[in-house]
Image (cartoon, rainbow, N blue to C red; front, side, top):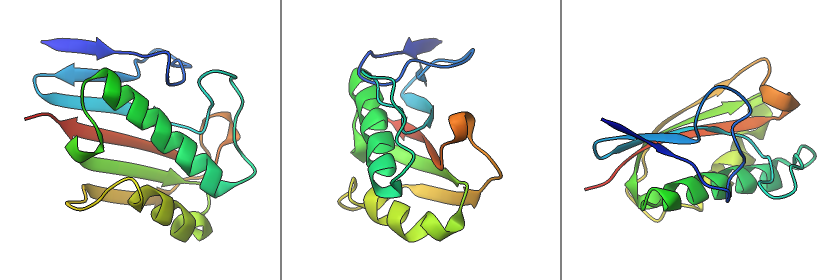
Length: 126
């Protein structure tokens, strides 16, 4: 059985998908971009601010699913420029205290709406 997770505190999907889907105790959060959920504005000029917004969007979706960053077991980070890795890594890491999730970070040629970072996660509730 699956349960659709959506919240107005994160950007609405821009295609045929949901913000997240929960199957059992596992929550699959769709890739989030630096799109402000209330204004619809993109953050494209500052990778640090963009990454914070992506992480806040993920947090809002997890919160809707009654979970948080401690429940994340896997993350996927997509960057259009690997030169942004250190800044993204620093921001990303600030959302965890310990027991970091498994993760990959890959450079891609392009992302939706021309953004420079997108992150998806998988979380598991006990």
